[in-house]
Length: 137
Length: 406
Image (cartoon, rainbow over all chains, first blue to last red; front, side):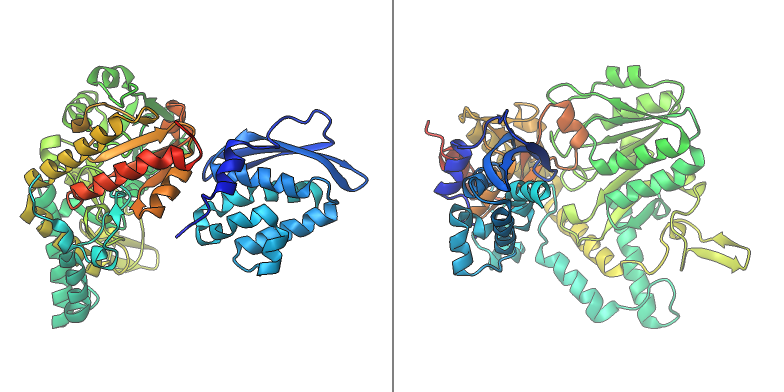
């Protein structure tokens, strides 16, 4: 049974920290998940290879919006290389292949681990991460 | 509602006693009688039907053709030649578009479809219209999903060759006055294609009474196995249509440079047929007929009324379509303020409740209603009041579950 509608997810969905515009951003990109109709625009300010600031706007299901917010919590202040590594770990978790230590590295994003059992919702969870990957890889 | 529980006939509830299955519009569960008929076919009657010259093959052919006769009687067709077995309603509708459509639609012709059609009664016509340079036009409904005869009259022109409409919408659950529509169409020289996927399992449907030219439906939504579908077409129309698929057992005579094709309905059934599925469809028709549509409708209407009554007092829940449960035929599509339909379905699933969420293969309708997606609970006669209670109980908690404090 799925257990991803936990407090971490509902809290990030109801009270997102990073859901706002970012006029000073150096790049932004749209991501769409046609199955739930989720849409996000991810904005980043990258200086000297470091994600200094980040935000997103958009609408969609709780999984997509919370996952994007949690992701920004994790990657702001990190180098793009570190962010790419986290992207890899997140994808590994979604495939159900991440071990305990790797889940630990993902911090709150680990709360979405159970989504691996719900193939129909995987696209929601990875929307932010996929968009991030397209921007920095 | 009568006390009799039909659930005992459905083995899936032995495996999952707590399952609240409210996704009947997507596909129904299967009673033991249907499963047994399929098993019996493969244990005792299996050979390649229509070809073999030995006893077992004759048995297989009889099973297959008897299923066709059962379908003929079930929908009141004049002849078994008018019953074509397909994989599902989608294939039936594609068959009409590819065969009748390609032979008859010309540049500048018009095809009229309702805005609430399932993609399977919309995309084949969109593709056909593009290929032929014809115009695809939409009949719009009211906010409660109603199509009026007047609106249809106004939308028809001398160029309208075909009107395509579901008898019961898979989103609104509303019954369209197909008989009246057929009369209006025929007065205009227009043929009518009726998608019966949501109606044939739930109400008595008689093609001659309705006066439709084509009717498509799926076996799997009416207790039968997946991969069983039916196309009904008036004999005179089918007779003049070219084959849709070419191959085995649909020919009369083949030479290196040409072929003549088999009689109806076999000219539309190329290749080895789904005789095991047909045996299951036959059993499903017998099972439904034994219960009777009077009982089925009574139970489904009572369940729909209970469902909508329970939702009425939830201020954040909005039902799509009519407020009158009698106009829903078991189908209740809804939204919950601030909660995405896919989240609603996932939370209901945590309590063992199965519903559909998304656009229900009706994207043009959702766009027309300015909705991104919706949730659909669809009941069948084998559901019981307990199912509805559990659903309502869980639905009440959804916003709280997502962090809203009311």
